Structure formats: C-alpha cells, structure tokens
Amino acid sequence: METIHIRLENLLRADVVLTRFPSLTSSHRWVKKGIDLTEKHLPRLARYLSREQTLGKLEQHRLVVSTSEPWNEERVRLALALWLKRLRLRRFFFVLLEALAMPVTGFMALLPGPNIFFYGLFVLFFFHLTTWIHLKKVSADRLDIRPDGP
Image (tube, rainbow, N blue to C red):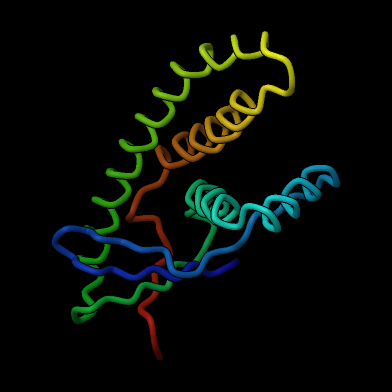
C-alpha cells in the first residue's frame, strides 16, 4: 500500500493539497513509453495525470494528513468529505465540457496532419471520466488516514 501525503490548509474550508503521491505507472510497454515521453517533455501534464490517477485510486492508499490545527479525526474526515464532494462536482463538469467539445475537435480531422486536439482532449476526458467514476464510490469514512508525524 503506497502512501499519499495530504496537507489540510484550513479545516473549515476544506483546503486540501496533495503534496506527495505516486507517479503514473503502467504494465504495458507502449503506454510506459508514452508516460516516459510525457514526463520528459511535459512534466506538469505528467504530474497532473498522476494526480488524477491517484485520486481515482484514493481508497487503495494510506493517507498521511498534516494539518495546521490540532489533529481531530472527526474534523479531518469532515474536511475530506467536503473536498471529495467538490472534486466529484468539478470532475463531472470537466467530463461534461470535454464530451461536448470532443465532436467539434473530431471535425478537425479534415485538416492535414495529426489531430492532436482530439487526442489531447480524449486523454483528458479519459482521465477525468475514470477519476469521476471512482470518486463517486469513495467515502471519507472508509479512507485510511493517519496523522503526520510520530
């Protein structure tokens, strides 16, 4: 079980920042080559996609939570529940907008050259959709959380 480090900035507003999380992985050779190229040439995109993949598998990881306020598990779980609700809503709107924009970028296939707009949008759509589907199943009560420190 891998560990994800989370920092709660404000428990009342549920300001959550993922500070350390696993990078993108795949057992498929061609996907691994694509991930390596993305990490080499587009590191910010690779970090964003890693974050999306981690959010999709949140219940499979141990969460180490650091807070600026004294540790209170009930308040931390409430803040995580609000954060998860906000993530689900945001990912739903991302999926909706990308699904509406994809047919428009599909018409760009008539232009000469590769249709990079459609491919890029499809990759984002895929990651947002899988994250949204998995986040619908995540409950803050079932998360394995630990306080930061000893």
